[in-house]
Image (tube, rainbow, N blue to C red; front, side, top):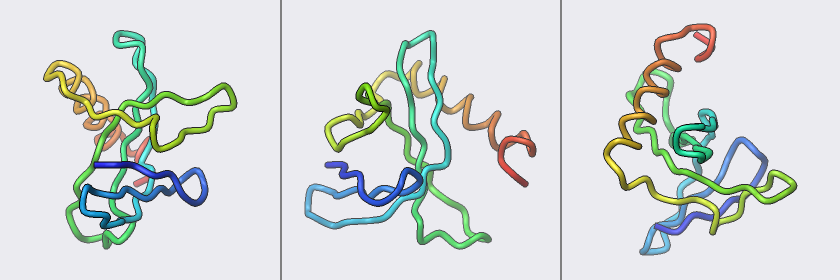
Length: 101
């Protein structure tokens, strides 16, 4: 999957290997000192409030200005790294102060 950042800081467009584009909202970003990486979690912008959403996660490298380009998103491959990201997401979803519910 190729990733292309478009629009403002809270939305980006992901382009798959077939050239299909889908707009995503940024759920949140965070940095892990254990892995010395930053992560971004996304969900489809077309998701209704009542429907279950699929959250995508990537690690990313921002430039000196904090900008992220399409080459800066990286798929997470290690199981232990996925487990850490899942734990952060679960904490986010379980804490009403963080998730805004």
